[in-house]
Structures are given as structure tokens and as C-alpha cells.
Image (cartoon, rainbow, N blue to C red):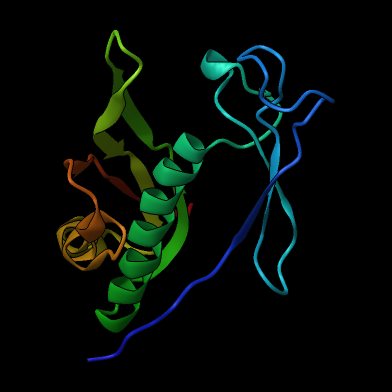
Length: 158
């Protein structure tokens, strides 16, 4: 068994001068730093007084599930002789917020649209989404369903 460690530094940058003396007096702005990688500007969702021009944790969770699935999927396609020429996913997560402000994601659905090189690859390409879901580290770490509704098409050469 291997163990991998990941580190990130989160720094709050939203002190407007009076700290957190009141719920409405501070920004949710922060930076996310991972060594040797570009700085990410974060905030909370605008529904929670955040900056709509910055990424929020909910964006990251949905994006992490989508990108992890894609990377495993591309791997399994490569080792199964399925030639993927394009991959686009529009992932959607549902967060249920309670009256008291508590909340949790109830599901994420991936909608990958994959283009493969030839028609004889389509069936295997569809099947490999299930295998990718089984191996995705992020999907295996969450306590809600991660669904996928793939569309696989073939590039037509005329």
C-alpha cells in the first residue's frame, strides 16, 4: 500500500479593518497556495456573501469529482484501445442547505460528452465510465452518490 500526502496553504485575505466583529463586516476572500503552482483566489459562494468572481469550495468539490473521473476514464480508454479525441464534462452538484445554515451535498452528476475515433469504440467507451467511477479517488472519498450520464459519439469523417 502506498500513502500520498497533499498540502495546501489557505490564507484569509478578507479583513476589511475590523476583523470578524460582525457577520457583514468581513470579506470571504482567501488565497489557496500549493507549492510550485499558480495561486488560486477563493471566496464563498455569493449565496453566502462571497465574491462571484472567485472560485468557492463547492466549485472545487464538483470540479475535483469531474476531473478525477476524466483522468481515470482517459487512462482506461488508453489501455483498452479506445481512442478519445475530445472530452467535455458539465458536472452539476446539488447542495441542500437546512434552515439553520447547515448543509451537505446530496449528489453530483457528471455529464461527460466523449468523442471517440471510430464507431466500433463507442460501446467500450460507454462501459469504461463505470470502471472510472470505481477507481476515482475523490468519488470514493465522498458520502453522497456520484452519478454519470455519459454521451459517447464518433467523429464522422466525410
